[in-house]
Structure formats: C-alpha cells, structure tokens
Length: 484
Image (cartoon, rainbow, N blue to C red):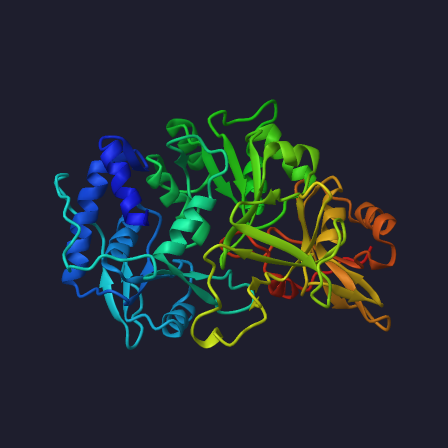
C-alpha cells in the first residue's frame, strides 16, 4: 500500500481517534481526512500538477503534514526547505532542484522564476472525503519527495523518493513500537522526522507537536500525551538531560528513545537510561537510503556503541581500499544497499559517483562488523586527521575527552601549532567547573603525542538541524586558545 492508501486505511479503522495534537488542540482522523480533502481541492485550484517540484517551507504544525499529504495525492514532488535556511540558501536550493512553486505558511522572500503561495490554514467541516480533483492517482514509480543530504559540506544534494520507495522506508522504520505509536517528531523538513510522523499516522497513532521545544514544554507534552516514541539527536538529548533529575527515568510512557544522527558516548547512554528512558534505540540510517540497522536496548547494554544488526531488506559490507570484503572485526569502509534505493543524486550532482556506484551506496563511514553480526560505526573516511604522521579518527579523540568529568561534549580539529606541523585542538562544552590542565593530562595519558595542544571553551558546537557536527565550522570558533 502506498502512503495515501495507508492513511485512508487508518481513517477507516479509527475515524474518531486523535491523529495529531498541536499544543492542546487535537485533530481526529476524520478531521484529518476532511482537511486533506480541502487542501487537495485548494492546491489543485492553485495549479499544482503531477510531476511539479514544489518547495515546502513550513513550521511544525498539523498544516505542514496536511499540505505534504495533499501535494503527495496530487502527484507533486515535494522539495523540503527548512525554515532555518537563509534567503540566499533557500533560493539556491529552489533553483538547484527546479521548483516552480514555493509554498510557505508565512511570507518569505520570493525566488525569481518560482511562484509563491502562502497557506496559513485549511478550513473543514469534518465530513469532506473527496481526494480526486484531477483524475490522477500516483503510482509506485511516481516521484513523491526529494530527500536532501545534511548539507554539512555545502548546499545539500538530493535523491528522488518515489511513492513506492517511501512505502519501503516506512516498513523499515518498525522496530518494536507498539500499535498506535505516539510520536514527537523533530523538524519535519528532515527525512527521518517526516517518516516517523507519517509512520505513526499510517499505524493509527498520534503525532504530538508541542507549541515549542524548550525543555519544560517538550517534557510536559511527553507526559500529558503519553508519548511512546521520541526521536532525538544525541547533542540535543545531552542538553535535555541536564534539566532532568536522577533517581529513575522521567518518562515511563516512552518505549523507544531513538537517537538520530550520531553514535552517542557510553556515558550519554548511561545518563539517558537513568534520567529519560531505559528503552534506548540507536539506528544506522542516512537520508539517501533510510534505515540500515537498529540497535535495541539489550544490544546497547551489552555492546555500547553498536548500531545493531542489519535490517531485513538491507545489506552491509565492510571493505578494504581495494573494495574487497574484510573479515569480522576488521575496520574498513562501509558500503550498504537496500531494497528500492535510488541509483544516484539528482540534477547537477547526477555525475557524482563517489557515493552511488556498482549497486552500492558508500556513505563515507568507517567501521566494522563483529563476530556476532553487529555493526559498529567508528567515524568518517574523510575526517581522518594526520598529526605528525599519526592518523587519528576524531571520534576516538573526542570520546577520550568526553570521559573526563566536566566535559559535556568535545570536538577536535587540526591547527598549525608551529614547526611540528598540524596538531589537534579541541572545542569543549563544559557541564560544570573544568580543570583544563587536568583534562590535558588525562588526554595525553590516553592519546600521547596526538593529544590536543589547544582547548577552546565554547557554549555549543556547530551543528545542523539533525544535530550532526559541522566540522567545517570548528575553525571559526574563535581565537581564545588555552595552552596547557
């Protein structure tokens, strides 16, 4: 079943159940269908046609989900544009992927050659059910959405998600969630956030959208609505955990705390179990192909740092520099393949074969598969730092620093330290009083000559919407070094 068919099946099963909660305002499945019906009518009247690329810029709201589903039903291809993008970046993205219509829930700067439409609400009585206003119904091979990369190295690349591919991704999202999951999604412009929200609606669950994402508002929404699935980046979770007392998990309703975007430290995992939920899950996923593996709480308790076993419908190999598969436990480059994955990037990036080649997707990660068949992601292939002839994986050095009391987060990067050439520097977010001399002694005991020679105390690390570290931003942190 394709996306719209799954939504309609959920409406048929439980029409009066709550589909979306925005603040304190619930929307039933019956009202969701009514709003969807009128949105399809209005957007068709505005000229939306099958195959048209439509840039969608909306805040977290039921309107965002209704508009996406209406565009899907009309056969348009949705280009997600985050509300945090600046005008120049937004315009470049619209031009790159050929969007001819931009829909937003507020007035935004126009892009030359792209029509604009402001949609601030959809009125409905609750009895509307018509979805066919054009005689067109999308099929499995029709485009649905352009999934964007994280954009940590420049303007995002994109791959086409067809209606069929999107359904395959929804099927691979399942990992022990109860029936009718209740989900708080992060930014709906991000693929995994949208997928999890729509997964909940297809399963007859509830999408909970707080009126804000400040700690107390977020925590209150979990408690009041019995949220069962919380997807969150480790960096964001670390901030939240500081506001939660110890003495037991704060949210007994949460049956899955799904960590997104990065592998957390063992220390963060322990704090998450102690203060948030004991049910911590860690997927290995990427915007281009979706979920590849998933670590369960039992796996993480026994093997911290694993991203679990490869999911059905996916394949993963670790290969050496010559592309040959290596033995269990040996570190190499990770390559993956999943059912129905795209064959390459779109538009100007179509000729980039560094990621998609020979039937595999190469995410640019290093890691190994253990004898038990568990996947361990150890870092990026393009982030290795050469320090005086010693090659260092930044994630390893950062994990050493984060072991030290008072270090909430750390990120290392190369600096020119003098005649000896490149050395490591570290940007550190402190969780309390921090003795930098003692931190340096700790780092040197573990890392020896590749220990950082400079430390920058910062309030936060540069990250993208999904909480991934933007390493290119580390060099701009400031000129306030500390030489232990």
